[in-house]
Amino acid sequence: MSDVITTPKAGGWLQPSTMGEAMELATIFAKSGMVPKAYTGNPSACFVAMAFGESLGMAPLQAMQSVAVVNGYPAVYGDGMLALAQASPSFEDIEEDFEDGVATCTVKRKGRRPVVRSFSEADAKKAQLWGKAGPWQQYPQRMLQMRARSWALRDAFADVLRGVQSVEERQDIPPEVIDVTPVAAAALPAPRATGAEKALAKVKAAKAKRPEAAIEPAVVESVEAAEPTELNTTGPVQFAAVNRDRIAEIGEKWKQIYQDKDNAFVRLLRALYQADKAKAEGMTASIDKGIKALDPEDHADAHADVLEILSIVEATEG
Image (cartoon, rainbow, N blue to C red; front, side, top):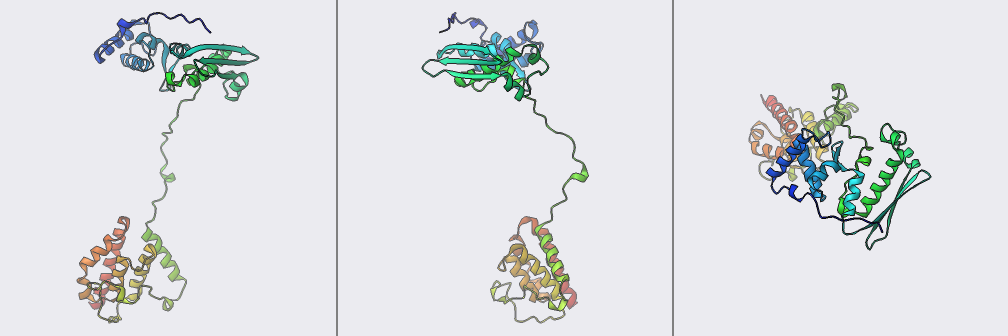
């Protein structure tokens, strides 16, 4: 068992009790010249580091020396991480070894099995860390040791460290890069055709492949299925001069879109197919109701088709 000497908690008089006191203390630290460069002249950074350290049980000054922000993430130096674990009542012992290019850390917690983690030169090479400029070139053995220690302590004392990584480990994680390169106008996708436009294209293509006389108006079905009031008709089509092919083409288009001959708008078109001018003009309420039964993205197309049908009827009787 390691000989860990415990002392009365120091720095109690530095513990702020209000946010104002904490900010005042952070300002003092920022001006002191005795804090890391990232905190010098930056009271806000000192304040956040103090708050982060306090959540881990660190005194303010200890947080200034142990907490660092790496690529936007707070982390704790390996020695500070060990201090947090050793301060836990559950801590029993730690053993660190280095042999044949492999650093091993064994952490013992009271009443638990030892947690053993290793990090080798081969691991560092696989992670493309070995020979990396900086500490990996200057102190390679120390970096292997800190990685093994970080893994062991984080697994053994997750309740104390709460997912915090070591600074040494965090520094080896590439910063997140957000691509803000503007997308060229030519690369933007073309506007998506509406369902009505796609169906209309299919109808026109099918019509072009067969003689005009062979076109069977799909919407010319028994009007018994129509609504018994406004959509009812007075019998067979009486206005042969009406361009029924075009009206039937419109009806077929919408039937293909909704795949339902009993759709309110399809039934409306069926009734308009047989309506005279007076009857069509009296179907305003049914027209609105039929259009509202469609998906909102199809309202404009449906409205345009109804206007075309009404213009056909009106021109025929003109």
